[in-house]
Length: 487
Image (cartoon, rainbow, N blue to C red; front, side, top):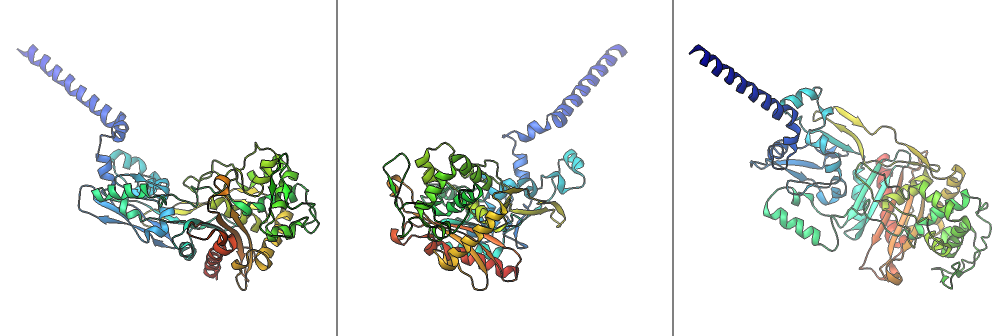
């Protein structure tokens, strides 16, 4: 009898050991597999079982969490949602996250191991730290000025600090309230369907995810290429440019919006935005140097993140001379985001150097302790410093005595460049009104802000669509807001 009991005891011990081995396998070695399984709702329920960290602008939260008392307890809320939607994005129980809510989700959700001094212990007990906060670089007054200036019209504004790359404003219009996507009710599904079906695409971040033909604002790049390459050595010398200009290898004539562009100097051609002069300059510079200069400014860069991704701006290196002429005045295949064109203006303002733009100043724990900071940003030389000095002069004269007078700010030095970009088959589309600029306050040692504005206004009379008339006043309001906040 004792032998049978002993055998039974050994068998039970083996079963018990097998259970321990299997439990160890499931809970330790395969824990991540089960945690990540889409059929496992525990992680999902836990994610919404605690308040999410906040996104801050000017020291104040523009996000929050609402206790619903349901299984998925907390829903995301947004203060002035449409104003900050191009920055925050949305955090939805049904549709996931976007923009900063997505790029900084580990911090906001509490999953980032840097939020706790004992990350290994948290992993062992499957406990998540309270959500941390994300402090943005935005200037609240500049953001409001940009949004108010667009006034619901289709378009976008990007503003950056030239010396650092800090993004001061990022606005896209028309916008939407991310709060309508936060929960999991039937209303959320209807809101999602409505927003995606809207022909005006309110969820499209036009400031960083939409590229446009930059039109005459690209002449800043062409002028830089011509000066750097030595094609132009004296900005006051005649450029030997006919008007109209016959595109090389074709019978197509390129004309100007204004008279008197024939053989103008670079200074005067820049001031009055003569297409013929800059088209010929682009051809004289050549596709190799034009492409290299565009690349130095940030075109064709597919790696830019701020921290969410930015659509690459493009300058086509595989063009013939006629196409190069059009590309050099911001037409043909040349396309740019408003953020890219703000970088172009910032390079001129910053002595030819570009600092990589960034949107997050630092991340913190829920108690306010710093987790990570933006750190030093890489520098890229877009043009020779002497070229930047000349372009600052040219851009200043556009505002004081050219097509950009609507951007002038009393007591400040302002440089700008207007643009009216044609598009569509046979240029039949409503033109885009552009303005790029920078401003330096009376007491400042260097420019404190660079701005790019694009307005796609289908309701305007085609003859009234100009960068100086529609976009420059918006840029002026943004620049004033930044300069006033510095004071």
